[in-house]
Length: 239
Image (cartoon, rainbow, N blue to C red; front, side):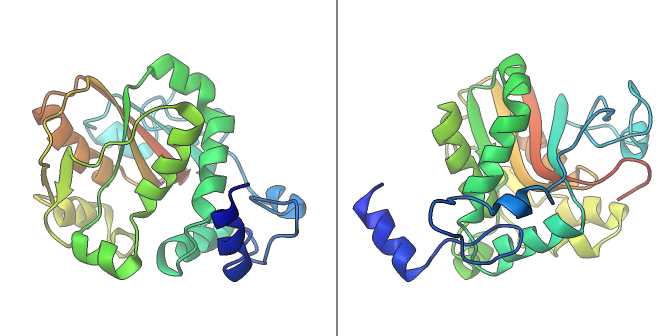
C-alpha cells in the first residue's frame, strides 16, 4: 500500500458504504455483514434502461412511454433504503471513499456486459462548477476514476459541460425533471473523438439526465452510447 494512502487512512479512516462505521483492519471496501444488505439488480430487467421489471423481454413503464437517446442501459444496485442512505452520504457528506466500493460492484456485475458493449471511454455525467466547488468532487467522476483502474478505460470530462445549475432531480416529478434539464448541458472544450461511449451516473430514475448528456454526445458525433448507473429504481411504475 502506498505510504501516502496509509497516512490519509490514519487521519481519515475509510468507512463502510453501508453502515458508515470505520472499517476494520483488513477490510478495505465494505463490512462483511453489510455486503449482504446490498441488493444487486437481477433479471428480469428492462431491455432498454435496465430497471427490474416483472417479465423478461419487457420494457419498463418509463421506456414504454419515452424515447431515450442512449442505446442501452444497465443499473448495478437496487435503489432501496440501504442505497438511498449510502448515496446521500457519498454525495453530501464527503464520503468519496465509497467510490471504490461502487466501482467494484460494477466490475462484478457488469463485466460481461461491458465486454459486449466494448466502450472506448467513460464519460461521467458532469455537475455544475459551483456544485463541484461546494461538494469538493463530482461523485460520478469519482466512481469513473475507480472503474478506470479496474477496466483500463480512460475517463473523459471534456466532451460535455453542465452550464446551468439545476434543481435537485430527486425532488421533482418526471415531467419536471425533463424540463429542469432542458438546455442544462452544452458541448465541452474537447471534440468527441470516440464512437462508443460509456456514460456513467450515480442514480438512474427516469433517464432524463442520461438523455440530456447523451443528446450532446450524439450531436458531437458519438455513434453508440451506453448508460451505466450505480443505483436504479424498479420499473413497475414511474420512479
